[in-house]
Image (tube, rainbow, N blue to C red):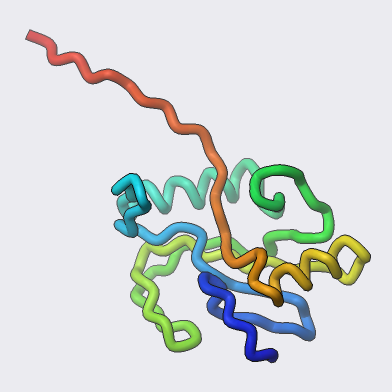
Amino acid sequence: MSDTIIPDVREFDEVKRHLLGPVLVPNRFDLHDEGLSVNEVEAACHYYNKNHFGQCDINHLFDVDCARVIESYTLEVDTEIDGKLLKAGTWMAKTEIDKSPTGDVIWEAILSGDLAGYSPEGSVFEHKVVKED
């Protein structure tokens, strides 16, 4: 393994070209102070597994066939991976990058840190809550 530090990737196998990291962490808030509960993270993981398992894209711009999610699950208990404690309920994914020309480009982007973690894609709908009298 190289000395490359990839922020959200916790396990990294250069021979198999596998990487493992968190997709969503419960109660981890973003710059908009928004986060998801354990139940919401689990629902997102299950939805992905039922409807989109294996599919990968690059920065939500284009799909790629050379990268496939090969494992996707939520942690049942707090778990330490590569010295980092991950909370129970964290959605984890393991991805395999094939050894095609496109896969080589993506693998190099991972090694350089240009691609540094998972980002789930989805639609968000806001609803106005109206109080009934």
